[in-house]
Length: 222
Length: 237
Image (cartoon, rainbow over all chains, first blue to last red; front, top):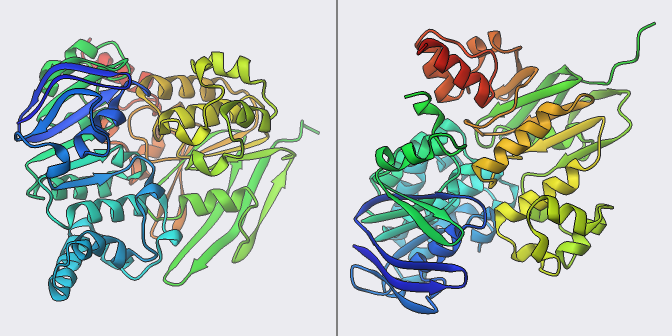
């Protein structure tokens, strides 16, 4: 379980929260605290007070895969292969193992054709696909994805949804503004002004948002 | 003699890189156009070429009655020139107080634009862009990072535009404005899918929700959320 108790960080405050393994999607307005929460889950930030634990351990002691909402801010290296290989190289994984893992991961993301390309030449969506591959290649326990889907087409998204589900990560915590994607989640958190105001399955949460722009179009008048 | 029409015509325009190419022909008349296409298909490249910011590998672009044009890039951070939000507004010739009040960011005047959340930065950027009218307005992924309410507001703004050519290059599937014509990039070529709703038949990238509606026998008139809900509710009486 991911648990938060009396946790405060900047404008975000969560008294009690527990998230089961699976895919959890965060929705809410710009500035409501979604990215802040994701940074805490990834260990990029630590709470000012209270606790946030992943299976009883702080995020910084947990294997995390992270994708930033600004695609360019994920990039450390010049070419795609080096970028995807980097989490394994930082761990001093043997070279042949790195090669086979990078190739398998690129294949799963449908980006084998990009492996020799320079990142600066890629489109926004392609950069996101590379960042996702780099986040998944070391098989993290927790995958934290900040609006990874806003630069992706429907076909790429289907492939990635599959990749995420079969990644072996115990927890996927992601935020999105695509409600038709959010319905494919085990658990939803709705953020409003630094507070979590709704939690539960999509079937439970979305009816509360029925007359808002957050109601999934795919569900229409149901 | 009628009133001269604003239009932009692409005559066998193409762009080539190592193992990649894009070709585009067609005329964009006044009104709102949507261009869809897979990741890496060349939407941003086409936007840059239409804006005159990228040399063409071949072909030519005719602009008629287009005296002002603007390209809003996919990544708002690439537009930033000011050290503070106020400076950024001023760099667009916009009074900071007025615009920040309008987008609910009054307290952020002295903050660095690059420390804003991506959604906030996109909102600020679009507000600065949309304050003026352009004969040709090219919006590359304008909906990315905006929350659902903001997407609705942007659609309302675009829907109200009465003149000029607006071209939206996007992956957005759910919250879209009513458009005059739909285009898509397939196998390296720009294809004119036509006018909605007939365009849906030719459109590879038709959003899943619209596809579902068509399968159920009530095709929406256009691609906006209102059109979709109208079609859905029509069948449910």
